[in-house]
Image 1 (cartoon, rainbow, N blue to C red):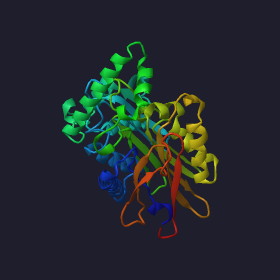
Image 2: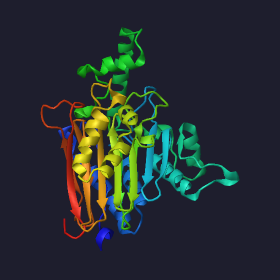
Image 3: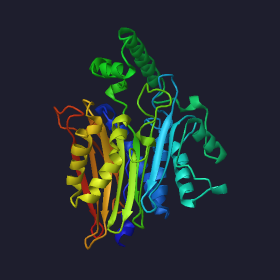
Image 4: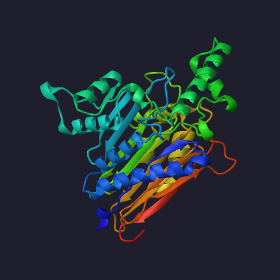
Length: 382
């Protein structure tokens, strides 16, 4: 059977995950894995499987994507999402879109449009749509839309209370520093742990993005990512989940394939194009763990593009498949954030494997990273 029986799927959230909520997070990721596995069991593609996982995660009120996303500074939900397919190298994305139940479906629709080539009258098909344009596209193409307020649930009233509390802190801080630029005020505010605008109930910190990477029976890799962005973000802000090379990457070649999905602070991930950099390192280095170490050390923590950032916050889930005499798939995850919740599954697994990866005790987030992995061989029962 070889490659036909092996696949991968993850749901991921990076930031800080309160131990009190660990079982909840792992259950959500586990169920997303099952949704993707079900699609693959039905003979569907890696792209379809990744979509199924993300739709499940967007529909969950416990993730910062789709329903229940973080609120902007004006109290609305605006989402980013993107997908990439490794055999065609096509990409589709949406940004700052409101009122769309599953932003990933718009991203997938745009990706499929790329595969068709030119539109009528020789028009170039769009790969990315934002704001009202993305919502209009969803409406015209029968992708479910909802009233904007229907997306505001996020653990019900607790999220709204947290939003009001954090907005009040921001307004007070702006009064204290009226001459400062918005960026400087944000840095000052974030430097005070007791005044962090990203804290939520039970200590959770919402820098999370949901993502998936899948390999189908043909060995094709697909990756996807979806996010509601950082809490109290400016309306119209575009995070890494909607940017080419920042949120996800998938690439197939003659010797195998790589796929990456990232999470963390969008501005940090966008400036470093972490998804693409991780993929390139995995292609260049025969040792996948060494490749991820290089990516996070040289391309992220020590990147010249974010040299003014004191604590770069990011995480990545990755897969590397090989088509040599000993075909295998390496599943990897790395993060500079406190924690990352993930799940993965192969057709040889009876159940998804779930875990919350955490930085070693005493390590300050954004100053170091951890890398872990799991290997699957096609000819064993791993």
